[in-house]
Length: 196
Image (cartoon, rainbow, N blue to C red; front, side):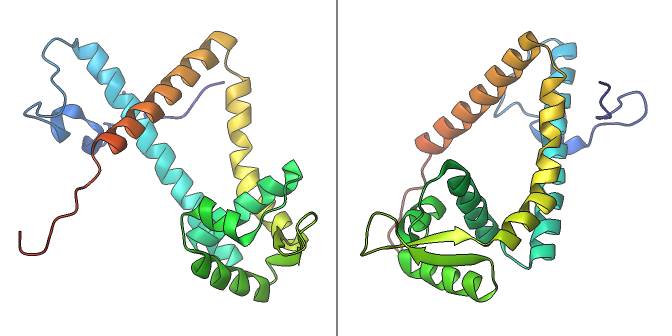
C-alpha cells in the first residue's frame, strides 16, 4: 500500500515539525552526533504525527457538529459504546471517573444527553440502589457512521504491514506513550501560594 504522506520531493515539511526550526539552540534535544539523514526521518515522523492529529481533530469536530455534542459528550458516548460491546453496566459514578469529572457534572451531562435521546437510564442489573446508563440505538448507529467508519480505516493500514513492521510500530507507539506519560508524571505543575 502506498501512502500519501509528506512528499519531500514536492513539498517541504511544515517548519513547526523541524527540530532545526523548533529547537535551534538544541536546548531540549542535543543532536550534534545524530546524522542528518536520521534527523530528516525523525522530522518526517513528527510531521506525520502532526498530520494524524489534525485529521483526527477534523473527524472529531465533524462528528461533534453532526451529533450536536461536545468533546466530553463524545468521550462519554465512546465509553458507553465500549461498555455495551463488553457487556458491562456503566453507572454515573463509573462514567464520572472515566471522564475525570465530578458526579454532579456527569449527572447534568446525562440529563442533557437523555433529553437529546443519546442515552437511556435503566435500573442496574445487579445493584437495585443504582442506575446504569446506556447509549441509545440511534446514537450508537450515528457514532459508528460518523466516527467508527473513519477509525476503521486504521485497521486496513495495520493489516497491510508485515508482522515485523507492526512490531516496530507497536514498540514506537508504546515507547512514545510511556515517554510522554513519564514526562507528565515527572513534571506536575507545583501549586504556588498567591503573592509568591
